[in-house]
Image (cartoon, rainbow, N blue to C red; front, side, top):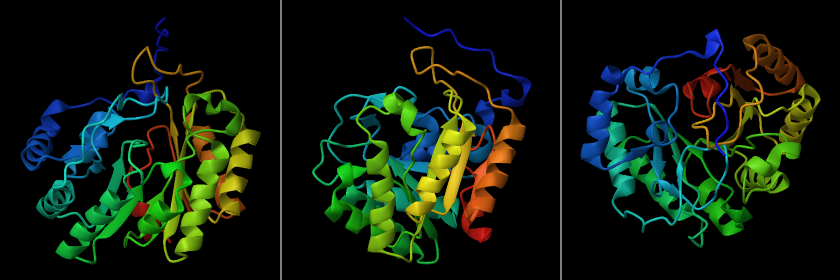
Length: 285
């Protein structure tokens, strides 16, 4: 049975303006690249596309896991596009990006979870201009050490892996484990202390502030110092239900708490997403 969609409060009524998206959508079609902005139906898409910003999605648009909160298609993925790393790099060049975010669908069907493809994409971008900051947002890759070593040594300045929610509510992340996600962040930091690690969570599933605080401590314990906090918005009535629309003041309270605890930078607001205004994290520190 589909869930009944809760009406959004005033602070969550951002409009998507198709006219602001046409230029980039056309370019991405021509260069054969995908964006998570489109695949996950991000509410910030008009704002980011109008500023010629996007988060590239590699490894195809079909995910092998069935997380109930995510708008990305689930099923059996197609074979990898060997031209994709270069196509992404070409799009980066056309857009004149100085900070690039690369994410992917989860590919449990690949022995390395797609790590080599991430590596090739970073190298293709760095070959254009080594000063371009590259940020990766990766799946857990089943805690494959060889795969994570490839990611850690890819040349990316930031590597993110999202916890998404507190341990009690992990039924929304089918195939994922809270402790495994923490280990992934810890391993990345230990493999290459020069990279910054980042994570992201969503509010609105019924989590308690104390649970969020404990999650923050867990991240700090694995040397993760960057965090994004946003509101969960159900992509459709068939996805996980929104339990609560969290007021902006609570987002700010959690940001202040986390900064006092020791994070270097936290972006926290209803419309914050993992890669939203990603350049701010390094610039702020």
